[in-house]
Amino acid sequence: MCSPHLSLSLHAIFLKVKKYPWWKAAMDYGIVLPATLVLLPVLLILFLVASSDTGFPGIFRQERIGRYGKVFIIYKFRTYHSVTHTKSPVGNWMRKYKLDELPQLFNILQGEMSLVGPRPDIPG
View: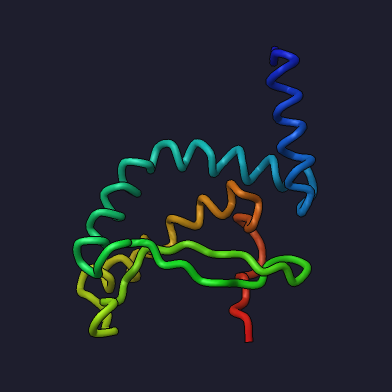
């Protein structure tokens, strides 16, 4: 049985998200939170590899348009060299296996994206 404090804090999280139905937010958090905790060492290693290969920081930020036209920042691992503007070999490998998209788990935890749904569009 949950403590009253824990259930109140979970209720506050779902009310804060409010962008999705409660069951969809529960599914997102129920899957993404444990996945993020398990994948944290992998995320750290990929961040260090991307930083050393393409330049610091190894995180790429881009504006996207989310639900109801709200603009948010999406996170990805950097796969292009910042100086030469070409894909790195490590970047090609990360893109092939979609590992460059793993930082989007944090976007889901922030309630900006969902596991299931349309891909956020690029402005313009």
